[in-house]
Amino acid sequence: MTDQLDYLKKQASLGKLSRRDFLGKTSALGVSAAAAGTMFATVARADTPKKGGDFKLGSVGGESTNSLDPATYASQVPFHNGKQFGDTLVDVTGDGSIKNILAESVESSADAKTWMFKMRKDVEFHNGKTMTAEDVMKTMERHSNEDSKSGALGIMKGIESMKVDGDMFSVTLKDPNADLPYLMADYHLIIQPNGGMDAPDAGIGTGPYKLEVNEPGVRHAYTKFENYWADDAHFDSVEIIVINDATARTAALQSGQVHMINRVEPKVAGLLDRAPNVNVTSTAGRGHYVFIMHADTAPFDENELRLALKHAINREDMVDKILRGYGSVGNDMPINSSYPLFDASIPQRSFDLAKAAEHYKKSGHDGSPIVLRVADGAFPGAVDAASLFQQSAAQAGIPLEIKREPNDGYWSEVWNVQPFCASYWGGRPVQDQMYSTAYLSTADWNDTRFKNPEFDAMLLAARAELDNAKRKDIYSKMGYMVRDEGGLICPMFNDFVEAHSTDLMGWGSNGNQELMNGLITRDMWFA
Image (cartoon, rainbow, N blue to C red; front, side, top):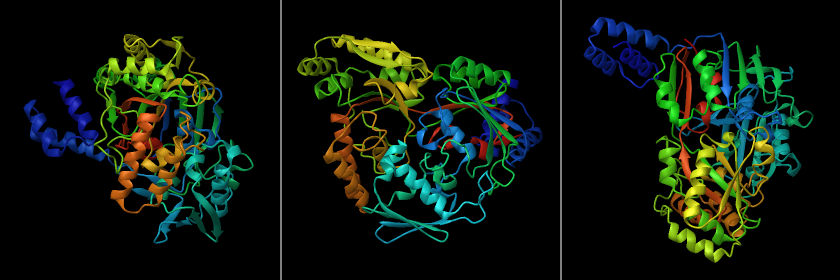
């Protein structure tokens, strides 16, 4: 009975059981109504945030080559570093709405072409400087510069001009875009002193925690910034410990070395959730595990070969064996039903060995091994997924060769560099941002080298279209184009499967990015 009771307490603490349901289920276990009521009240009191404590996160996605420059963030540890020391103008909540952060208010012209952001007063950077609208404009200018190699460069392309008037930062777009606030929530666009023009990698921002230790690939330590402008961060300190090995990460949580971990492998999630001191959480969203081909590099510059590989992957098998049900099948496009204006009528691509063999023959490929690069850190189960892909492709006569790469340096030396590799995307709140970041011809993070002028024109047209029905039709055509002509093989959309100590409270569902969109150190606290 003890195990069942502990489970019910865990469910109630996560908000998954109402008081009535809790009393009913505990009554079935022989617990008196009075005792059950006391238990539930104890859980309910934990909803009140408590200040203090030293929080430790065990995270995959850290490398010795990582920088604190927000423009460069491409994996989990840099993303979480940014969430400690920095803030963006706005953010996206778990229900998909916009929340003002450094912007006190956001307004637009009637045609959604000009946007005005009024800045909060008395917000201080960690170096003692007061944040101004000028710092905001300089930040946006830096990320708009080709030389910055910013991950936000694609979404900045639509800006025609920017200006500052007192505490007001204004943006005028080349074309109207009702989604601009969502673009400004991009995690690369952390506001820095003078926009980071002087020292982009200094780790100085307006966030709740101030940088104390920066050891890329090892650990990053922060202490609570005493002049933080908001009241949503509760820990005295935060330490991000790089643990790229999944088994070591799980062991660190169970032993109490860390309080939370990301990327719990689906194959151990059920077992881990039965541990008495651990809560496992799963959040569906827009994240997807992929294999990416450079469409401008031989042999992947031949679309027949790309189609052969897309038909040769068994998506359902991967969802079952790699995700263990913590996700859904993908359709060789980065958009799923989590996105507004998704077209559910786009046919699902099937596993079809006959079509794969037919397209492979038409490609004229010489039969030499097609090298697919992969690392454990690409996504949970990436090596096993590559092996499944190799086996199914072989049945169609397609010779895949798996080259296993080290985790360290994977995101700087393999992803977006080598022509065929495993990767992942966390997704974006709206279709415009996802496509602008990774599929616009001029986007720095166009990791499939998909460059199509017609697609680019449609993306701009969708931004300017304020009629949602017409806009959905444009996005549908873009989805078909990426699916049938692009270099993306998207076998599955993943849930964010994570785990934390039962000593932590305040977890909530937010599928925009992992670990509550990176807000765990702001919204959670120790019981």
